Length: 309
Image (cartoon, rainbow, N blue to C red; front, side):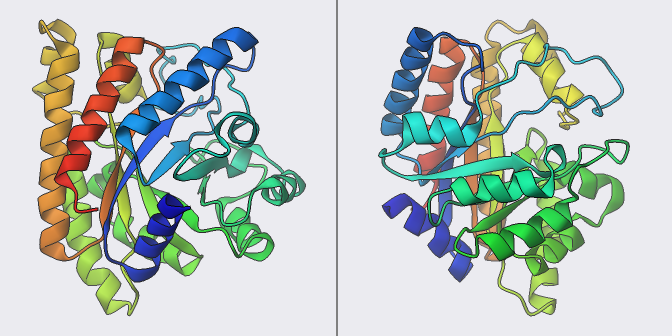
């Protein structure tokens, strides 16, 4: 597929820019008629955006975040690979599948890998904190993926906030590249400063290591309500000091969030181009509200207009 070729090409050459669209499968217990409507709308939105790839997230309950109660109750979703096979197969563009390594045994991971279509890009996710017990460690999961599916481009996660705390996220990226990762997707970015510092440290480090720079795809997510802001903060997303007031009490939180996300995208675009790094953006559409999903489409289209694709 053309989209998959582009994603693979950018990862293989270390040059290029990408637009991805992120979504979650429907709830596991959603009735068939509602699932059909959800899928139809997802297809329509993808057609309007025309992304290089669509990310399908693998949601798991994450009690290790921040030590505070979760703002929204966790809702189990359909397995991403089943959702793609049943509802997204045959659509244009690549599909990138997430998989939480720690929630599955090695045998379960091998079985999942065996079900994937050839060349399907995958992103393996590790534990959210050191306190979470993992059935399979992330390095071991990456080793299994390389052995079982050498045809599948392997992606990793990066968290700019970790760089702000410890200053070593760029070293994590290099280690993950050595483990087979050819692209990265970030945690949602609301504060561009930590991401810029990460890029500034990664660019010279990857050259010193004699490696090709891997594209970093920065996740952007609209925040249309105080509750959604609570969820971002619970997940550990850094939010600039002036943003919560506008989102909690302003007349147009969805519009304000859109403007802020575009400003983040512009700044990261300028930084990556200045450093000669491949990059992209993944605009998430994970809200149940139709207005949020439609706004995410418009954000994706505006972000796409910034890119040289």
